Image (cartoon, rainbow, N blue to C red):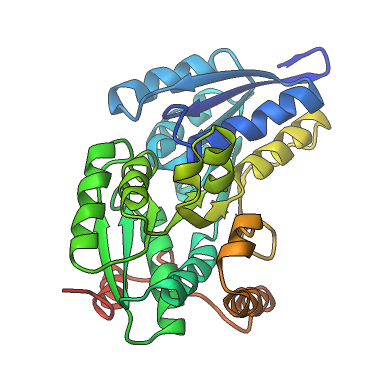
Length: 332
């Protein structure tokens, strides 16, 4: 369904205001509204499983282009996609089980989070003065483990003896849990934390700011986001961010919709080479991180892009292998 020549699009997300993952999708599609005249509606389910099917069915029954994130909507999409053969579904940050069949109207995008978090780990290990750094994840899923695996490997590249506190909040919304985890890691000696946990990051950020310690953001250029909202005190805590360029990829999908070049029935995997992920190198990063470290990170980035460095991924490792990587750097 197009309204005139413009695509009629529904976006299903947990909610706005996380300054990262969800907001990136909204921003990318809002640019599409301006550039393509996209008719956009946003459905928010609040990360409440009771709301997943309702949000999905409301979108599928009113729109011919429906976009959603994988960690909450995968099972619902697999269950209902075949019931809406005229609807084009895009799931980002994961993929459906193609072996289940009936998914010819689905397109998936996976981001190589391990590649950008490798750079983030190298940055953290280059920044710490205590030799102890932290990683805060949201829930225990493959996407979060992929961030963590890359982070550990990048940190070990800089310092084989690095110690890393790794903890999940078991939530993407519990800001207080983020504060609790950050305080605990600081008490044990961590002096920089990378947090990949949705709105939980806001709690981590507040504690790091209070303690005047640096943090690495996620999913979007979070320095720029907080600076734009007048929270410079929080922005100045974020020396860089491991970005998934979600807004750009969704914008491209809408452009494909507009030109009727819709891709379905496959998964596209994007990393540093495809600009699907990137480390935020804004002016604050350039002015804060020593130039020698920046040059080392740039060199590592080139090596990942040309294949000289192949960063391990949680998507291709067994659980035993993943836990082995974590144990190799586990801090007491």
